[in-house]
Length: 385
Image (cartoon, rainbow, N blue to C red):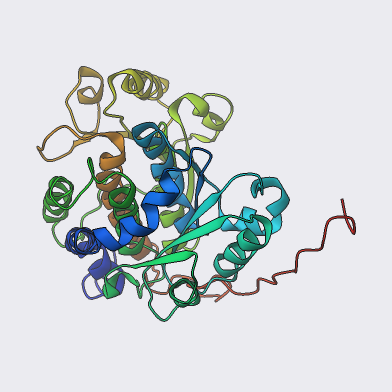
């Protein structure tokens, strides 16, 4: 890494480091407004046919992908994740007027055209439609529209989570933790989640000033993140961070360990780093470890690294990161730990390729708040099929 470039002093570094504190503050705020929040949510959650759709664009969409499977299983409610970028282009495929809808919108700025349009389309398509807007910017359109609407609740994150760096870091994880606390307070709350914050704080402390590579300092040209279930979405977000912060100079991919064998494994070569997020679930974990051992036997990758919460002969047989000691975590909690490593790795890779992490796109063709989107009005059925 060039001596003139360090992580210290960048917004991206600051926003990575502030995450555990932001989570704690946001969840304590949810404790404080719980009665008001429940007055809005409780009547909706009693509807047997309620659909709860978690939505957002880009990184904000991945929040739903990470947490929806666990929320659906834990609460017994109908949670699904659909990106705003899909809702806007194909509302007829995703918005069912026959069922009440609670649209949970995640947004850092709340000004992305798709974020605003998805809310409007949902209201247009679904007669009984409600909104929970979880956002980091009180000046954003998404937040202001929710405050002014009778069918919406606006949940604001701590101000500093409106990340000033290009890549979403504290914004994604704080919105993710907050949504979990909203819908599963018996399991995720300001008390229980402190264990996650403490563990992640220990991870950050172990990484020092971020001057050393999280996974070493080899000259990788591509990286693959692998995870099962909701951890596949964490892998997707991890891959996006590398693409964003290196402006594509390091190519990144993601998949599930089982899916990776079905073609994508072809991309592994002597310049590839593979990182496996190992599940805490004893059943799922078997599949992760099988693929980990296979990749090491193949000997095609430059490095295959496992990140795990517990020791195992398979992980111990090669390069691995063992999370700091804590209580047993479910995968949706482990996702926060894995994302910390991925964020720091992306930051150091950005510096190693000579980028400025806070503004990595020198061409200006990729922007912090997406530009160039034209929202086309929905035409009444009959004019098109």
